[in-house]
Image (tube, rainbow over all chains, first blue to last red; front, side, top):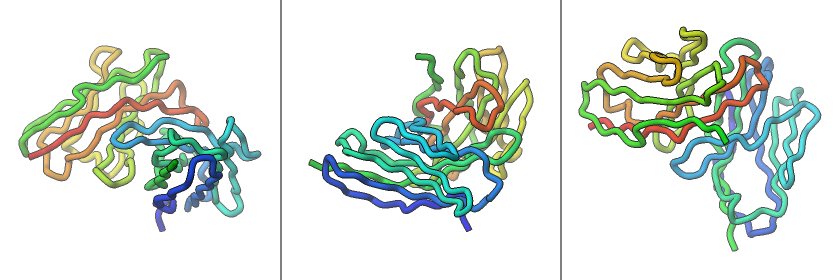
Length: 111
Length: 115
């Protein structure tokens, strides 16, 4: 089983739509969770950390379900500029802070 | 806003040659990382570095790879004898402290092409 699994997509949505991405992770002891955004041939950029209680940043909402080992990202009122690959990332419980990436979910927002 | 920088942006080399990829982490950061991404694949951890020594390395980071922080600002990745399969995007990252909640900031990457 992959450490971090995501639906690769692509998700093609019209501008203004709401879209949700899901991610599962295999190590129940994983401690930190993030969503990164990666544009084509660019570096990953941190979109948001994911906290146990869930958190929101503008149009973006992240949720964590530790019991199900499941992370989600909701994007409301999607913009053309949201088109990118969204990477689910987890860290292990201790030492080194190594990031483990999922393969990413590709989002294409269309007019 | 502080950022991680990497040079060169693109490196082309012949198989068997040595390459050195350079990174300048964010100035007050203490933890440094190299990741790689083969075209079309996920980002993979290579190595983490703190206090002038390797904290952790992956299976990918074999004897052909080494890292160094020679002068307190640069952080380098050396591949001694490149293979075709080393062709990838190499990202340097840095973070401020070894907290699992701490964010890692990535540089723009060096695209390595091994011919």
